[in-house]
Each structure stands twice: as structure tokens, then as C-alpha cells.
Image 1: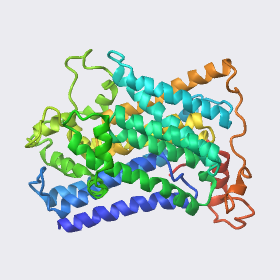
Image 2 (image 1 turned 120 degrees about the vertical axis):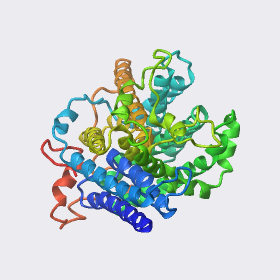
Image 3 (image 1 turned 135 degrees about the horizontal axis):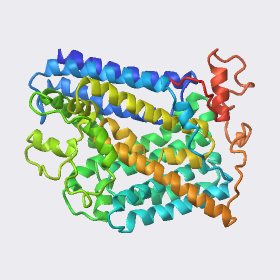
Image 4 (image 1 turned 180 degrees about the horizontal axis):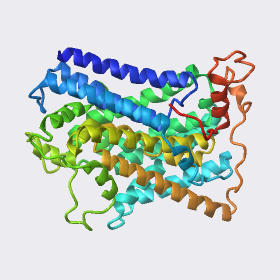
Length: 485
């Protein structure tokens, strides 16, 4: 029976991936969006991870007392979560109007202006990460990481405009390398690393690739994604050996460079055992442990408050889980274990909370994606929204409240900083205040060997559902009354 449950989890994962690709191929949703990043995280950390648990018959550090019963319940909960999430995202009442409230940063988006902003973000981001600012450093450092990712994104935006120009390639490699190096040295974590690489890919996609045929887009994204995934895998393999040491930056980089990517890929494919923790929580809450009503949602609100200001600040579920599960051969006081999206719901109130969390996540991500679609040709709007992709990818793994709060701090903080920086640079006369046309379908076409997707000359008889959506995407607009799916 456990093998059947594992097979169901694999099928469900394939259906989610197929749903995203089908929507993109039909012109109904962008290939790169925060919703899709979150769904990929759910597939890895909650579905394929659950399949591994079921194939092992529930054995492991978080051994299950009733693998079949818990596995069936977990499969139902995962399906309900996905249905509630996708449905809420598609309908999202009021989100279209709400997404029009944030005022976009609109300046000249010429190469010169974006190069200047990349340098400003790189320098300011490094300062925010390195300067010891008492009490608020845990907040300013998050903004610093996001500015590093935005600098890499601006480099990607410029590179995608002229991918064969050496005067663009060299500065782009420098900015990307500097951002990656700071992410590794200052914060030895995967999420900042994913943010930098992901921001670069999002920038290339929205700068030019979004308007190309789907097959061409996926080939180009794969060329960037494969080395990025291998780098994260090597980092994952190396990180375990350095987690409890005081190794310096040189030792960290050596460990990553010499790590076995196969081991890291195996750990990533397993979802780092997240589903096993979620199932253990389902078995033990509320029978053995009392519910923690909406604790994940509440912690997202008071995460920014330093513990130095609040001595009794509650601990997260990921901090308590090693003690609750009596994990052996580890320092339980420093170890944190991500409980997964399903685990959070099981500990915070059960099935009703599962639906509530799915709806809240869907509405929040739809709001962010709607801002991107409305201003798809404006890099200083798109990049602050996608500057913390590592947090979005990790939502399904947990600690979800912390990740959501870090994302909000990163996005809002970088948005405010860029708005202030833009005003200062305009007053100094270093950039123009009026946004120049960001994209024309015939710009740089001689650098590619195919026509742009949706061009009447190359697509005289498109499928019935495509023309309106393609025109909307090419204009970077969003009709107020449209439904996203």
C-alpha cells in the first residue's frame, strides 16, 4: 500500500508540473512567476519527498507508527492544499485592484541607467550585509542580500538585451560573480545563493525571453538553470560538513568546490526529508502534543522584533521539533528542522488551517505576480518583487513564517530603497525621470535566428486562446477583469 501512495505522490507531482507547462504553452501564465516557484518547492519538499518516505515504509529518523494511515491522510491533505491554492490564486477577489496601489519606480531604463543602478545596489547591499548595525542588523542584512540579487538581476536584464556584446558580457559576469561571492562569504546559506541566480534568470526572462517561442525560452532557461542547480547541489553536499564548524570563507569555498554534486542532488531530490517531518507531526498533533493555534502566521508578523527586545519571544516549530521528536546525536538547542507546509498546518490547527494557509499563500503570491505582470517591462519594479526567490522556494519546506517575513522585509525594503535611490539619482541628473520605451518587438532581432513569439508574420493562425493573451504579455499589461489560473 505504501508503494501505491508513493506512486500517487509522483503522479500528483507530475500533474502539477504539467499544469504549469500547459498554462505557459497556452499563453495563460508566465513560465517564471512566484506562484510557479512556490509550486516547484511544494513538488520537491512535500510530494517527491513524501514518495521517498512511503518507499521506505515510513522508516528513518522520524519513524511513523502507522505508515499506511498517515500516508493516506498526507496524500489527501496535499491534494486539498494544492486544489485550494490553485483555485484561490485563479480567482483572487480584489487582488487586481490591490495590485494597482503600489506606485512603480519609473525611470529611464537605458543601459547606462541600469548599469549605474547595478553598481549602487551592489555597493549598498555589501554595506548592509557587512556593517554591524546594533539590534536591526538581522533586518538590514536581509535587505542587503536582496540588493545583491537585484544587482545580479540588472546585469541579467542588460545581458539578455545584447547577449553577444562583449562590453555587456564582461560587466555582467563581474556583477554576478560579486553578488554570488558575497552571498557565499557573508551568509553561507542556500537561499541567498538561489536568490542571486534566480533573480538573474527572472531578469533575462522578462527583459527579452518572455517574448520568444516557448521552446526557445525553455532551452535558454535550462542553460542557466542546470549550472545553477549543480552549484546548489554542491553547496548542499558541502554545507552539512561545515554547519557546526567555524570554518572561514576560504574553507567554505574549498568545501563547495570539492563537494560531490551527486550527493547534493540526491539530498535535493529527497526534499531533505521534509515530508517525513510533516507526517510525524500529523501523527503527534494533537494526540501527543497540543495545537499551536496559527503560530506560523503569528510568527511571520513578529519575526522582525529582535529577541533582545523581547525576552519571551516564542520559538518556532522548527526550533522545537528536535526536542519534540527527541532527535539523537545532534545538538537540539541549535538544530532547526523544517516541518513543511503540511506539518505547519497539522501543528497549527489541523485541516481547517491547511485550507486557510493555502488560500493566504495563494492570495499573497497572486498579488506579487500581478504587480510583475502590470509592470513587466520595468526592471526596477520586477526585480524587487523577485529578489528573495529562495524564501519563496523554501515556503513548502519551512519555517514558513520566517521565510514569509524575510521575503516581505526583502521585497518592501529593496522597493523603498530603490524608490529613494531613483529620486536621488534623478535630482543629481545621473538618470532620466521619464521611462523610455523598454521594448519593441523589432529591437535586437538581428541577434536571433527566429521570429518573436506572437508576431503575425510568424504565427498567422495561432490557437484560439492565444491572441489576446499574447498581446497582453507583449504589452506588459494586465486587464483589470481577467482571471489568472
